[in-house]
Length: 452
Image (cartoon, rainbow, N blue to C red; front, top):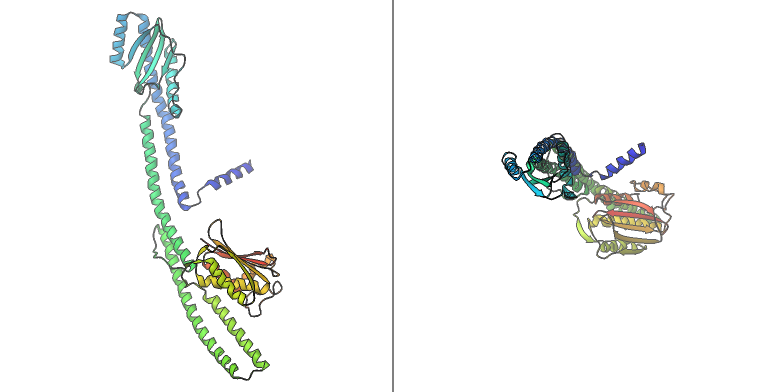
């Protein structure tokens, strides 16, 4: 029993709306619809059926009177008076069909209207059975404004055409119509109000996503309900603090770059003027390594957030990156559709791919780069190598800044452990990510995913 309850709960959860708009609409519309259904049911059950039953009993009583009056005196003169009295006082049209018999079958209502006519037929049939001793037959569907009732009498059939409103309450459909109109109207109002509130949240989400990707911020101001405006105001304040922090860091990096590169330049000039020896060669190598490390630190801290997003052909960009790796001595193959496009920051993506490709080239002899569209949208770029790889449990550790997995892969002596960290930072700045996996070539596979 408990298992069935859990399965039912999961089934309901899977079919519930996933968006805030859908859930809010369901919260408002579902109770209204249930209330309308309940009110309609109570109306038909407690009022409409009662009124119909009483009307049917009254009509059955009039018909029983007419039948008994005819049986008391079946002469044409007496029947003419009976028919005229019934027409004037009861709005009943009575005709005597000599030698006729009751129909063998009853006309069924259309399937669409069967739930509506079934209570009427049951009520009228019950009333006629209580008041008449003779066989009878009736039809509530043949004529739009009348009910056809026939009673077997000696010598033929007494046919009575009664106005429909004498057999049952005819205004029930008006009530249902008004209830339906009210439900539709309330639903439309709910949609308008909910959509207005959800749009404010969507705008806040778009602004946060644009800021997170480092793109240009569209004009945004707090809008919507009090809670949404409060969240938007908090976001704007947070954005301002982050922008101030970025500006301060940029100014600091500019100063550091100037202060460190100036003495490095003097050292390089001094070493260039000194007579070449083994010691000076070592010193030049140290200065070059120091300059490379400074470049890596500054690149990691600076990021690529200021670059504009452009639509580029990914194959051309990948081949440009791989040309540099080939010139450095790597064996690289490229597989990508020439028409595959991507909305990216070109220089940032080049830097990320360069780090991935060069990292693969350092640790393997064969490097394969492929780009392909993703089934759920966007693209992914795969960089494979045939090197020693990284243990699966240390994939995330490889992305940590300044991390060096010496025992897993032979690290580049010039590296500072920022290549994968920079690449992931670029990918996430585009709204994507980078993950590691086992390569079909036997080494490491880096998968760079970009959104559509």
